[in-house]
Amino acid sequence: MKPDKNLHPRSRINSIRYALQGCVQLVKQEPNAKIHALATVAVIIAGLVKGIGRYDWMALIFAIALVWITEALNTTVEMLCDLWCQEQYHPKVKIIKDIAAAAVWIASLASICIAAFVFLQEQ
Image (tube, rainbow, N blue to C red; front, side):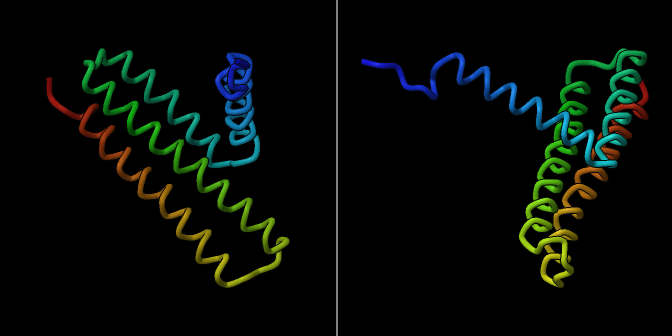
């Protein structure tokens, strides 16, 4: 019996490669992703300098991931909307894009709160 192509190690490696290419495109094409990248590096350095504990790292990793995931999905929604309406203004597309952007904003606010709890707590 021939193994399922989707379970083949080469197929899994290709999937990872495509995901990494997506990450590179996100940072290249989306100005806010560059800000997220800078914030990610700053938070990691601050965590290392402060010597935070395991649970603080878990909270920060969750916060960082939440922002990156929402930014990636927001960018995808925006690109699909632009493709669909061929770069022409459409009032419903504006609402869709605003709501997708709101998701990133909410994730960012939550992440700032998490970082404040982690870095401003007394030891």
